Image (cartoon, rainbow, N blue to C red; front, side, top):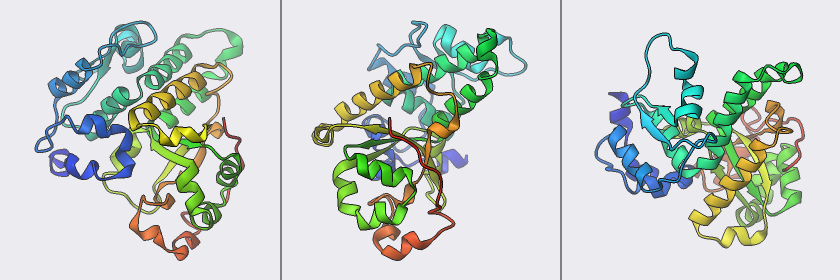
Length: 277
């Protein structure tokens, strides 16, 4: 019932936190929570979505009880294309919408999970846990950071939040874009709160990127993230991601229109340096 009470896609269409999902939210009935039939109807509008095993994607009811390996969530998705989805569940709804917005990236995450579960070669054995941990972290809490300014990327990676989001606010608005990927973050963004933090994958882009239509930007990011995740040298450790305090992003909270907002060290913490991709 809580999901039904909280569902108001009209409000989500006004929020930059849901921008990658806007094309799909526009097609849903905002008056009631969408069921599997409505989600699969959206999927039918772009029938080329497949897992990396080549199976066409579709959303199905959630399996119950103790399941054989092939029927468990990630193997079933990889082997049959069936994404188990609970009815009247915000978390699973956002998972489905992210599949629609970023199909190549989601397929890459699923493939990394499947391979980690099935690889038995000794050199990979010790990495299986960390690979799945990183894939899960990005899947649940990931935010794609597109940057046309390497210097700003460095400021972000150095956790210099007040410099980035306040002193260089106009530069950030012109040369950086933040796109929530993690479906767990989308669920949290229904009720934004100070402390809400994404795990950022920083991608360098050309300045023209920011003049492209939204659909083209999303497609480009999906391709870039999938390339990153498909590379066996990547997705090995959660330290590949850099925390991003989402409500510090200019325009993402009315409260961040003052310099003092960024003095909250419990939210805008100092930390380690990461390198952009």
